[in-house]
Image (cartoon, rainbow over all chains, first blue to last red; front, side):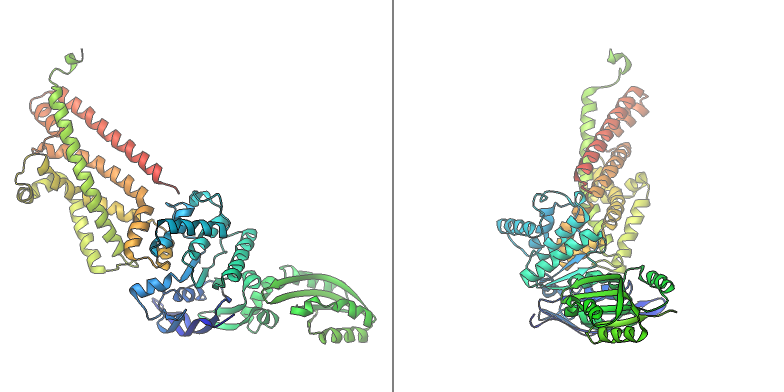
Length: 345
Length: 222
């Protein structure tokens, strides 16, 4: 990962509305490095759409500056802005393909805009079709494709002019989970192979978990939390971030399960362990049992992979002599594992 | 045998007037398509939130379109007589009918074009912008192709209306099947001429509709 590719400084976007001013983006500062996959997460209305559209000049900041690949996007206009946009492509939630064109013709569109001539254009389109795995569908129309295939066309189209930055506007939100995963894998593959900087906005934490290196959490126009994905997962500060982290770390039924277990087990303690990075690969539980006179019952667990390490949660029930249980918990705590005792409430 | 039922029909004249009707319809449809598309594009592009947003121009074009669309065609012909005489040099004949036909139909078609353009997914236009497309490219490669089925079905409806307009223009001396039906059928009481002219007009209308439907369904890949 190299130099700064994108730099947003004190960006503000204010829309006049009937109820007064609407601050869609409020004093945002971000630095995104070359080759990074940067995720912005937030609920709808948090301002992430407006923010990503500032990166290719579809929205202009009311205040502040936006620099992408050495160009001040918030200042340039006309031909210069159009030229810059060929280096900053975008893919969309609803794909936005031209229904009147075939797969090949859709992918050729940005090449036509860039003035790439016939035979060269054809060659490039063939390369791109292969890159996104759409061989055999060249002459199909978008209406004949599945959602995942449409997004592959979108990605091929976005890569046509060898951009430096790829903006993903909720690119997987209209897809089913399996297709989402295959599209995310394709994005990681492109990021690694082409060294492309990717900025994506989403409301789904598992998208961030799966592919992002850095994450910014947005709430009512502000970036409220920012950092490497694993750090944010390990130690979420804001309540909104905690909620997002729970989306992937805790299955929906966890709370119910815990309540249910607390009713059943009157002795001992129910403990939630959080594993980050390398600690996820340590035999912590075995060591606890070997070194302490306790019984351990594993209730529920999950380990997720992120781009900078693994991340997991485990619910266990530790039973035995009260003093031993306490010692066991302290031991786990000393192992760089997050420990939270689930109490009766 | 047929001669018994339609004694007054002179097929040579009938064919000549059919050609005149087709000529007036053909030229006016072509001109309406071009002028209406341009006006429709202007209406769309100058509307709020679009690329050439301009309230004043939008209001002016909108007003012109609404006014000409509202004037009954037979009155429009009379109103345009000085303009036609200046432009064509005469107020009689097929060419003299063209200005009123086009001015009567283009605003009507412009509204259909505008509706067709509004139905284009805004996201597709945004995508083209994000690729660095100029407004010209967006017009030629996004707006027109993506709305083409609507433009073609619109021009089909307009062409059929224009066949009717040519018949009205015939009443004031433009020639064509309408003129034939009026002169022979109405003024001389030869109902068989009116009947045959009507059948031919119906055939023209059906053929236009069929061609329009075929092209529309061929173009529509949605």
